Length: 471
Image (cartoon, rainbow, N blue to C red; front, side, top):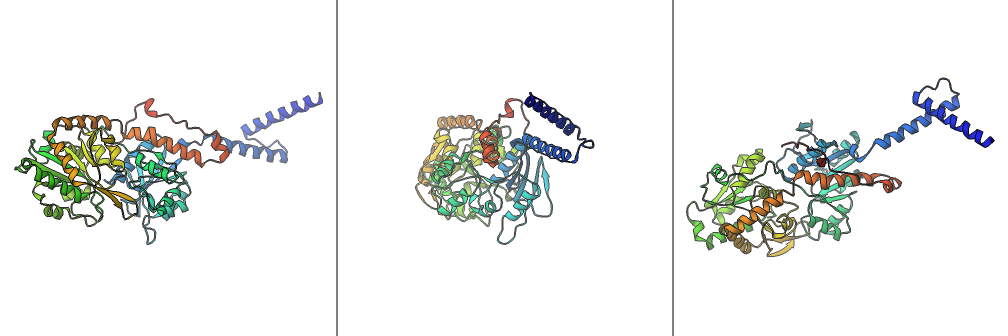
């Protein structure tokens, strides 16, 4: 009976504690009980705070190129981070390129902060660590070339990679850099497979395409925009020209075009054939493509984009018209980590020719919606990994078939369009990126908390249609 009485008293005491804690009034209590109740109140408040803190409330620092820059990294940053914010994730961008120090900039729904690049820290990793600390972010997503990241992964242990692997058999020193990340996501299945060879369990998170902007348009009207006769066969090339190494395969593409012309006199007739090239043709960091066109004797067939566009970038709606003016797109790069231009062309119903290597193989859905050109050979790149050397002779055969085999070109065009519709940005974010971020969040918890953690994310797109921000 005495034990029951004590239990009853303890229960009454606990009830009293709860009532006092709820009201927050300690004036009528003894000093010891006051202190005990205050500590209990603090403990309960901390537990409630932790209970309400989930992966959906975490703060994300995305480190990359500024989201308004018209490069692959800029485009992906814009589409990913804008969708994070639309889905309620507290996110900011820190840019190593596209914004000078001295202020921050808000474009659309994304706020971008600069870094202070100094000798020995060209990408501003110290600034990233400082932003991470000042804004109390939970996760730093590193989205650029992974092999430069080791100083950052040492400074900020919560750094996760979203990157590309475009080589095979990276040198050991670069494998070690990849291993230094807390978690790793890669934009191609090729890259995930490569990482597995190095003992890295990477997550596949692809890029995407905005099919509301990149879509089929009347081809004749789009050709006229380029001052090209609607009957003219147009081969398009959309690629960067930023490397002294011919990473984008400019030398092999120009040689393949020359071979195609030599083998098809019909294309040599005035107005029969044009090559439209969307790039910075005389970039100091790359090739002098006008000189290369002259040396390969294809200059009179080539239309280079207005050099001014290399400064300001071409808006997506105009870029869509450019893609729609093509009969086929060609990319004979030595390697690619994803290749957005191929996917954007496919969304416009334009079939593509690409090197059968790295991410380009899967971009053409393993040859189901385009012409894959087997490499002539492979070699070591400046990074010490294996890269492809494109085969201009096989490429010339692919160009010829693409231009003259209407039935096959139309089949690949239909398949390209259907494939692109399965590769949208909303799918990339909801199906792949958000679960990856949730897994990163769960992995940050203590071991005992990890056991209880479950991936609970369900796509908000199933519940309601979310309007995406146009860039």
